[in-house]
Image (cartoon, rainbow, N blue to C red; front, side, top):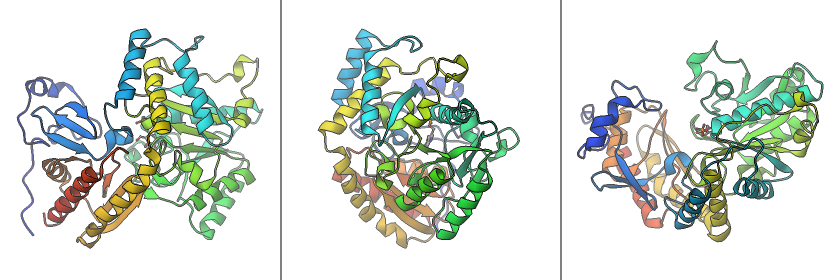
Length: 436
Ligand SMILES: Cc1ncc(COP(=O)(O)O)c(C=O)c1O
């Protein structure tokens, strides 16, 4: 064992720019113990798949800015479309107003999504789109004249966002929101079903709770922030069947998996499942700015199709359907049509699988897995987290290991060389880290 590195003050060892010196004490960072955390990396620009630091250092962004930058950064087509929209109309409210970027985007999403997921409600972040989905599901039953169906079943290791309703359907025990027990609404949690026995349990559960459950919410195929756990399309397809059998609404949270990440445009496609409600966000605008959407099938929408104001969906974020964000999303969809993005995901999966395989031999590593453009190295216990992050930065890559995993979700435009560099940095640093 070598000595562990001493605590670090900055994630990147370069000079601290004046603007960071001046402003750092005034910002509150996400998911961060503020007293001890090292100074974040000072990013001044993005280029291709890289973050450019104040001193000119370039880091390969192995996580595409939290899964968003699917076409890499600063794609000229997206920049052009957003710039044109910026000059014409950066924003207008959506209550009582229609604008072309939003309507075009809604119709394109409806065409892209499976089945009759045709009714698009825009919002400004993934968590809010989950809030809307939960509210829609509860009101679906109320509008049908059924009372009491206001609870949800979600799954262990689930993560659906940081707002209150979304937190209530995250894993109540192992998630970062566990200490809010008592404040959050109590929901139901089961393990993601895999075996026949699991499905029998789920079957019983749905039958017994039929009168209190509004629906079931799941991240199809990949549970992201709860630890990058994968489940097969068969499990998801069987879940759909059981929801049908017990008349449950099925909500698919594709905020992380949507737009190619798992190898198809939407993860649902691999299971041939049409959920009743789907949430998308993150890569919707290719990481340009925040936009999300909750999209419902005809069956759900029909219950809101009424002249009665009490049956309307009472939700309307100020910045919903922001025209700039919609222009970015439309430009991103153009690129999915004109560039071989989805085909590239299979190659990235292969590259990640090969590049990370040697990590399996390292002491402390318990699993190496890939799904689409997602690569995961899972360890028994992730110690010296900040030092690990800093060592990865020193090797020229930006990753943010957490919980018990080092994971990669690179831009889908990453080249073979960049992918090699990303994987070799992980191999090198993980080999050192196990000795700390
Ligand atoms: C599956 C899933 N749902 C919801 C969210 C919340 O999205 P946002 O951070 O845009 O609120 C995330 C974010 O990581 C997510 O991965």
